[in-house]
Image 1 (tube, rainbow, N blue to C red):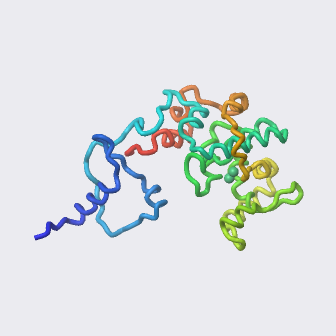
Image 2: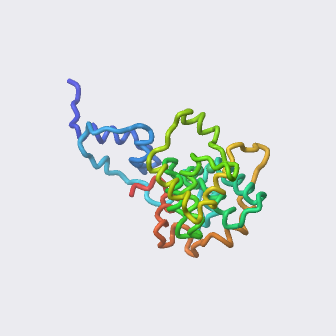
Image 3: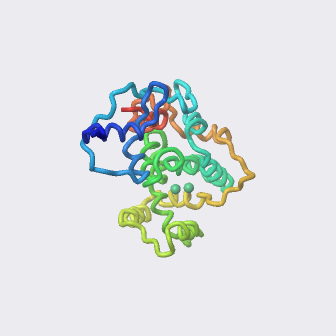
Amino acid sequence: MAETKTLSEQADALEFQRMQELGELMIYRSTINKLADGEWSDKTEFAMGPLKPSLMGEDPRLPKMPEKPTLIDFFKLRFGPSKQHLLQSAALARRNGLPEKMVLACLLHDVSVIAFFRPDHGYWGAQMLEPYVDEEVSWAIRMHQALRFFPDESVGYEYPEVYAKRFGEDYQVEPYIQRDYEIARNHKWYMSARQICLNDLYAFDPDTKVEIEDFEDVIGRHFRQPADGLGNDDSPAAHMWRTLRRPANAL
Ligand SMILES: [Fe+2]
Ligand SMILES: [Fe+2]
């Protein structure tokens, strides 16, 4: 006779299948990762999952980070290859003669897409950076997300062709994007967020490789690097950098 499993055992088995084993350690996937893969179910009972030693601490699959990591360490050791988008946008901003503070804003404008979450990337990015940059910089990063969808002929900004291709010709923004656009439009820092859009490069030059070291001076002057290391500090965003450092920690 076939062995029958209780619902709870089935849930455990499923959880097991979904985990990777790393030597003796179990590596859990966060719900946000599962949801992003389209996985959702309420068909099983609540289960704690198998009680096995789990990853807590440095992730041996990822490049080792220094004890006290800097923003540049995160750029090099955690940001994916599309960081060239940030680097080339910042290089363009510099060529266009923007103030250093705005070069930094362009350098970090899509930090959430490159390193964290894509959805609502302007909002997440601003939150990650708020304790460490000028208020105008994080505000502009938050608001560039909404402004991207709205042309401004006075500065030569058109609706991005790539958006029409990606989201459809008749794509309508959601109400919160419309609302935040209107807030930004009437804000004293409107042009700062708009400058991010104007220097937001979609056409990359594959032959141009910009290095993060090119911006070491700008970062040094305009990013408040915590002495204890980014993520080891007690700022309201430190946990986001810790999560980026060790994204599969069990808790
Ligand atoms: Fe963006
Ligand atoms: Fe961008």
